[in-house]
Amino acid sequence: MERIAKYLLFIIVMEAVLVCFSGCSIEDFKRHKKVETDDVIITEEGDTKYKKAFGSYIVKSGWMESKTHSGNGKYFYVKEGEDNDKQPNNISINSGTNDYKKEDHEKFKDAIYAQLAKQVSGSKATVTASGSTLDNGELVYTFIIKSTKSVTKQYYIVGDEKFVVIIESVWNEDDEKDVDEIALKMLNSFEWSK
Image (tube, rainbow, N blue to C red):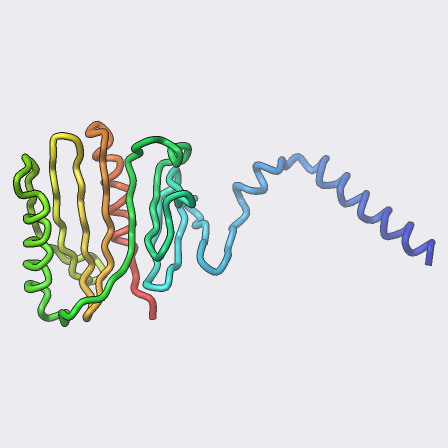
């Protein structure tokens, strides 16, 4: 028995030596390893695909899910290293239900617009709305709220008595195009859960 234990120890030590001298660092290994869990997959491009109860979507590399701010079914994403900033640019995603069938999408849009217009009334903020269809055929309504301090873009993916909303909050106007790119990647990669 002692002989077997020594033999196993020898094998373990030799494997460690081979790894150390193989020329691959731990960072190289992490970079090339495809990480998968039930709800997170690192794609070959280095982006992250998240699977939530309501659906899946891809967040470009360089952005992370904020553990500090996410919770209760609402997930926030910030640029890596900015999670603890006082007011970082961010993108959130969550789902909800409503009384509108998918074919009644215009009534849904009108209700959202009326609510947003009421929220900004009395301020210098403006609200604009538009609609489009994603490459995968999903209908999306975009609402843009511009104020003197920020730009907020809300993208509502319309389902049958349900929706998913991706909300982009930009506090530094110089970063708007970069934040748009991250939000649009999430939007265009979104797939409903089956």
